Length: 376
Ligand code: HEC
Ligand code: HEC
Ligand code: HEC
Ligand code: HEC
Ligand code: HEC
Ligand code: HEC
Ligand code: HEC
Image 1 (cartoon, helix red, strand yellow):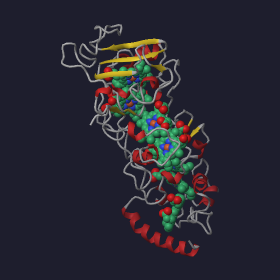
Image 2 (tube, rainbow, N blue to C red):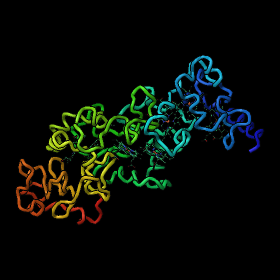
Image 3 (cartoon, rainbow, N blue to C red):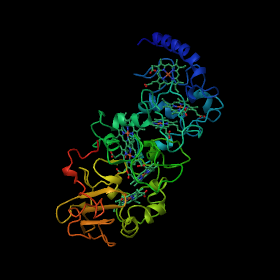
């Protein structure tokens, strides 16, 4: 596009943006007292190659202002900022060990005309509610993330279809796309079984004083708090801090429907990730990953060749697997099992299924017996 014609378009855009600005919140960039109002903080003269006349290439330009010290007198004027400006430091995130590679700032942000990121200033959305997308054209933040990480993704390097794990037809999923179906006594307020959570509640900066969002973290997986993925690590408030932000540690370890959390996690030092997939499970209750097509290092089939979690309801279930050299063929909890986890009946599945009381009706269908292992 010829530069002059761009300037005309830009001027027309100002005319379009300006009257709208009073009616709709265009976001911080267009709030009085933040940036010089003539568009020059970002659009200038000839502009960098292959940009809509931006001062520098996109991400470099964003970072020039989004770093500590940029709004100090002296630098501030040169960058085109007013005295009210206090832009969040994103540069400090981008030098952390884990950063969000493969997407630029404008892949996730609309810089004009999007409105404020609600929730960031404490007056908008709180934990437990769906966040809006920081980029125009997506119904929610999760919708934006799944445009690259989900079924319709064009990304070739991502081995997982994360959208599939969050599908509300699954027997279990963290409630990102829909309200959950689990029995979850450990939820900490304000969360309830009607809450929704967001990708960026888990994937965010690891320093709560820093800029929110999935930009950078020292924790593998780009996580907002520690989450030990290594088997054999001691359990503590901090080793699984990510989960304990939303789940009461004491309830998980001592009084939830799985009576052997303490045995596994504290005594045997089994990492949560060995049993749970933090996103969802397409064929198992309680985010248990043993029925999924993907396996995890350290968990092998049982002596009868099965790798499976069978459970129809909270508080009862059985596992077929070998872990830490211990054969589970099966071992379980609930009315079909002794207090040591051994089956009370020769074949607990035949004698009533793990999910039912022995006097109950028919056995729980095994996943392979179902026409479609996912719920309709
Ligand atoms: C905070 C920086 C910033 C400010 C201030 C800014 N822009 Fe932009 N503008 C951008 C970026 C970045 C892009 C490229 C967006 C992309 O590639 O997705 C852009 C793109 C554009 C485009 C190309 C079409 C489009 O939307 O992608 C026009 C036209 C435009 N800006 C006009 C304006 C006008 C007029 C103003 C002043 C009222 C303004 N901009 C202020 C950063 C800014
Ligand atoms: C993968 C998507 C993604 C990318 C890439 C991304 N952001 Fe963000 N960013 C977000 C999300 C999501 C939030 C809001 C998080 C929230 O609401 O808790 C956010 C928040 C922000 C905030 C507000 C932080 C605060 O606490 O006030 C700034 C500033 C920001 N991003 C700038 C940038 C810049 C600059 C880049 C490029 C270097 C960038 N972002 C790249 C997704 C992204
Ligand atoms: C000229 C300086 C400048 C540039 C360049 C700039 N920003 Fe900003 N940005 C600001 C200021 C100032 C704020 C508001 C800070 C405050 O709340 O005091 C802000 C706020 C934000 C927010 C929070 C929005 C909200 O409504 O809460 C996001 C996200 C953001 N910028 C992203 C970007 C991205 C992406 C780019 C590059 C395309 C960029 N910025 C370029 C100065 C800049
Ligand atoms: C424009 C496409 C795009 C969007 C939108 C996007 N991502 Fe990504 N994301 C990527 C790519 C590419 C990678 C790198 C994949 C790789 O290394 O194989 C990645 C990697 C990640 C990783 C792994 C980081 C690591 O190193 O362990 C996480 C976590 C992540 N993204 C979360 C998010 C979240 C949360 C959102 C929404 C706020 C989001 N992404 C939006 C493209 C995207
Ligand atoms: C040995 C496998 C195993 C390990 C390791 C494990 N869990 Fe579980 N967890 C289960 C099973 C099985 C259930 C389902 C219980 C039921 O509903 O019958 C469950 C249920 C839960 C629930 C839902 C019930 C509640 O407490 O509200 C939460 C939350 C949970 N686990 C968190 C964790 C966390 C956090 C860790 C790591 C610190 C962890 N689990 C480690 C097997 C495991
Ligand atoms: C409850 C916390 C939580 C939520 C919510 C969450 N994640 Fe994750 N995510 C994790 C954990 C923990 C890991 C790393 C451990 C693992 O892979 O099991 C991870 C890993 C990832 C990875 C890298 C590994 C992989 O599987 O490809 C990507 C990409 C990712 N998440 C994207 C997303 C997106 C997109 C969303 C929202 C639609 C999301 N996550 C929601 C906790 C969460
Ligand atoms: C941002 C808050 C948040 C974080 C962080 C979080 N959870 Fe949850 N989790 C929830 C909510 C809300 C539910 C309730 C969903 C429902 O009602 O089924 C839930 C449900 C669960 C369930 C039961 C699911 C079912 O269908 O039975 C398990 C298991 C679980 N979480 C494990 C974990 C583990 C392990 C971690 C750490 C990787 C974690 N959670 C981190 C909010 C969170």
